[in-house]
Structure formats: C-alpha cells, structure tokens
Length: 300
Image 1 (cartoon, rainbow, N blue to C red):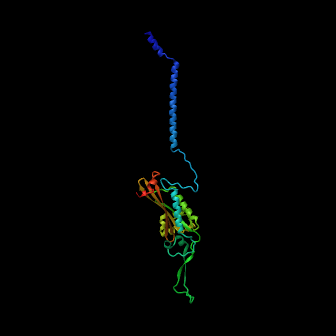
Image 2: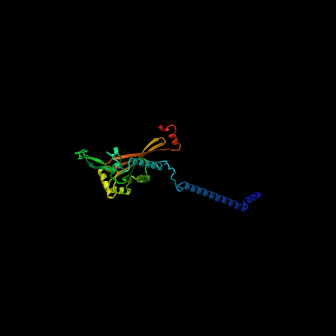
Image 3: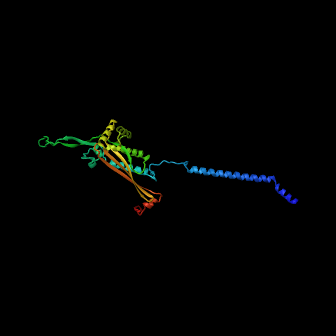
C-alpha cells in the first residue's frame, strides 16, 4: 500500500526543468504559426494590389513606318486616318486650281466644279461686227465668259465641322479629325481654309446652326459676318460620319463612311465625295478565320 502511494507521488512530482522545456517548445510553435499566418496575409494583400488598379503601364514611341493599332471594340487610328486621307484627296481632286483660265458653262454640279465657279465670272457683253462693213450688228450682243479668275489666289474654304451619325462616340478623335482635314486642305496651293476660331465666332454672332446655312438668306448673313472679320469665303465644307452594323452570332461587321460635302456659297450647288472602310469584330482571334475564311463562310 505504501508502495503504491509512493509511486503516485513520485509520478506527480516530475522534474521542473522538463516542464519548462515543454512550455518553451509550445510557445515557439505558436509564435511560428502566427508569423506564417501574417506572411501569408501580406502576400495575399500585395498580390491583390498588384493585379488591381495600382498596376503599372509602360509606353514607347512609334516610328513613322509603324502600323497603327486596330481597335478591338471600336474604330481607332487604323480606321479614321485612311478615311480622312482618301475623302479629302477625292474631293480636292475634283477642284482644279481657282486661277485656271478655262470657260465653264452652266452650274458646276453639272458641268464644272466649285473651284471653277468661284474662280470665273461672266464678262461684259460684246457686240458682233460685220466683216464687210465694219459696223456692229444690231441685236448681236452676247455675254462672253471671262477667262480671268474671279478670285485671285487660293479659294477660301469654310470647314463647318464634323457631324457624327455613327453608332460610336468619337471622344477625342473628333477634334483630331477636324484638324487633320483642315491641315490637308491647307497643304495644297489651290485652297485655304478659314480659321476655326473665326468660323465659331461668326456662328455665335449670327446665331445660326451649321445645317441652317443651306438657306440662301442665312448664307448671306454668315458670309457678311466673315467678311467683316476680313475673311471672305467661297465654299462651305461639311463632314459627316455614318456607320452600318451587321451581326452574325458572335461576330460583327461595321462599315464606316466619311462623307465630305463642298457647297458653293453663292449658288448653293454642291459636290460630294466619300470613303469607306469595313471592319470586323470577334470574341476570339479565330473568329476572323471562321467568319471570313477561304470558303466564304460570311454568307451565313
């Protein structure tokens, strides 16, 4: 009996050094687990921040012969720049130099061009002379078109602006397209565009909208306002952007059309030229080959 109690007391009274060692080991494990937890949480926070709005972007300059980017969701530089270049070249090619000495009968819309109409006028009436007697023939006065230009130097073009009727917003491209068209008009020797600031000031002064200038009385008021600024005008130039969309399953084709309209300020006659670019949009890179492949799959 005494032996049993002795053994129990011996078991309960263990070495205190061993108890301290076990406690230190347990506390070290807790500290290590807490440190690992904090490290894991820190890595997760850093990863979330890197993949979020705090990610960095890098830029580089493009050379003049680098290709323009093709927009994945809407038109961009690869669409608008060729449209402007083609449309401006077409409409200016139909307008010969304004000081060219040529006779143009009738309205330019039928037989001539706006530059020809603005550059030439009908001269004074001349009388036919009888070659036998040298006396004028009664009733033979006819109006002979003048071979000299009405306007000396380049013709003045008033670029009214760009009207967007497409399915997309132009955002910052609208002003850039205006400047590109304006610069190309001034690049030649036959035309000079009027400053945009003067055009806007004249519209504000006359309280006219661009589409109201098709009325003769409004054109006269607008031309008089520009004339008071020392800027006579010969033509009005309008630009319109339209689009047509065709959907087929997950693929879309959109046709972009830029139309330039040159209006003779005096007569109201006009000529019109346009340029067109077609563009496809797909959810995958293979959509281009699947829809517009070698076997005319685009026929539906």
